[in-house]
Length: 269
Image 1 (cartoon, rainbow, N blue to C red):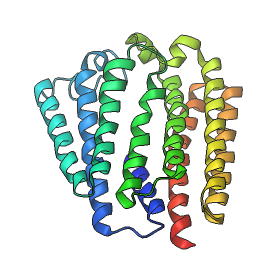
Image 2: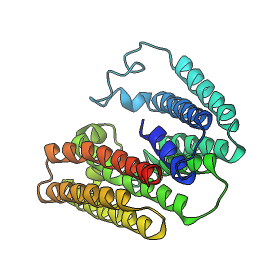
Image 3: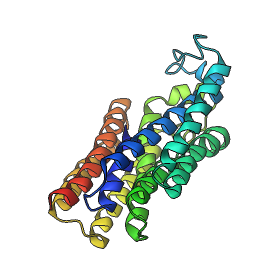
Image 4: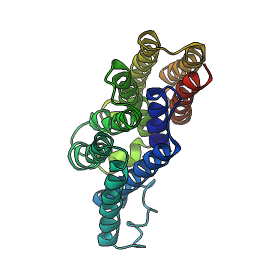
């Protein structure tokens, strides 16, 4: 859902609130197909570690409810369909959709996930490409704004997934996945989450300063930023699973809210 909202909000900002319904539908459809296909492939390639992690043992592949070959085929088909759907908008949008899939599947799942604690940092680029796909679905104009929106997605990912990893660090340890909490512990991870969140909020304010956003975005970004920073500070002061889960859930609310106020700002001005 967040991938679709990211692409659509970016497109609305690019078109200054003027975007065709057909473009919106194609953008959401292409993003949904690509995300689903990437998820299928992620489940296929991670089926060995999913079988040993308590939180993923009940997925269809570890339980033997579906054959790996079928999952691989469906994932590839979904991704293959997403490209011509996005191509109905334009070539650049289609290329960004495909690049987002490649980053998630090839860069994150196949290469980085089992090798480095920076796996989700660079894996966050997949969300950044959703923002770029949305922007260029509505305009061919080059500016710093789509880059800043993409940067927001990149910076949001560590706070989101490191919080999640704090909750499930035993599972990652069991599967020998070098997530940050496994390597550094809860206290240091919570500090990195706080620093990442602070940088994210700062960039959200910088976006206001370089764009034509008005009061809706300013008020919304400040309110959401203060709440997210407060949640991250509480996690740093008390790095428990309960605090980490709260921070993980609120990070989704933060991103969704920020994207909504972006879109609303250009629609209601």
